[in-house]
Length: 110
Figure (cartoon, rainbow, N blue to C red):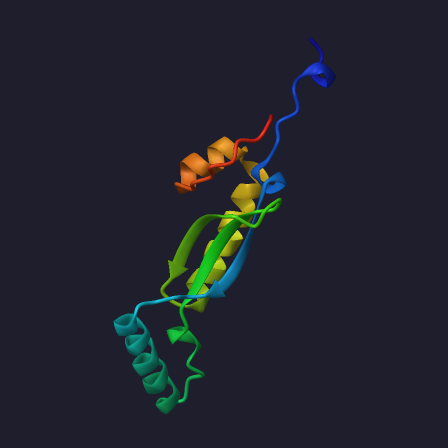
């Protein structure tokens, strides 16, 4: 069997995309973030270290949420998005869901 006859491997990026969203923390955690942001601003920072952000993976075809991971701050969440994008491009759908613990109730052919 030559290489042109081997089945083509589909990457998870054909099914999913990842974006950064504002974290939806509970009241106590949101208050803690506000306090940390205020303290950071008083000390001359811009307060971005206190901003919660969430990496959200969704299906491309119907926008269904597959995975949601909240970072401790915006930098951590941006790093998660970069890591997830890399894995989406390199892994199959099944590998990605197993590795990241994503839940996709939609079956795809492939």
